[in-house]
Image (cartoon, rainbow, N blue to C red; front, side, top):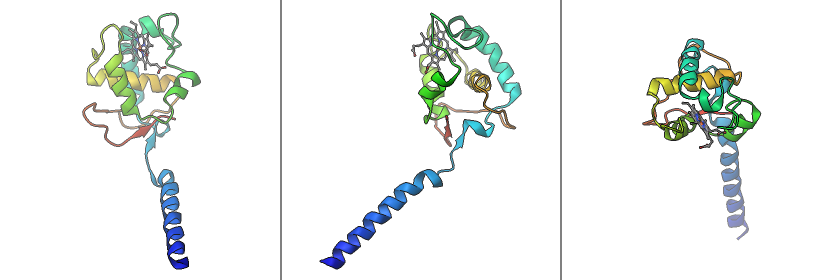
Length: 141
Ligand code: HEC
């Protein structure tokens, strides 16, 4: 009995250790890893002004029409989600008067602009989220 119970404890400990090691082992990129380029964000600003600014304001702080897309209140709401989830949500619901109107490239560019506006660093490679598949996660934090 004792032996069996001991084995059970060992097993339980192994499960706990495996569970704890998941966050450490996961090598998800995050929005702090330079996941878009400056040039892409510049393109995104143009698309944002044409398609989003009427409601979310040119400075992204929002207003009566819509919430802000900048600052801790906004980021806090998405913290822990992936950029793919964010892109999927944005594509499905925005622009609110014509959801899904952005091309795949525009969607990535606008997200790059939103990241830049929230002071996340640019990098070497353009953001290239494909809505058809989540791909390797990029965590929002
Ligand atoms: C016609 C007005 C309008 C336009 C244009 C518009 N939005 Fe919105 N947006 C809203 C409103 C209203 C909400 C809040 C209600 C909701 O979440 O559906 C919102 C919410 C959002 C959110 C969620 C905010 C949060 O706190 O999580 C995101 C992201 C967003 N919009 C992105 C965009 C982007 C990107 C564009 C341009 C491609 C855009 N919106 C264009 C009105 C608009």
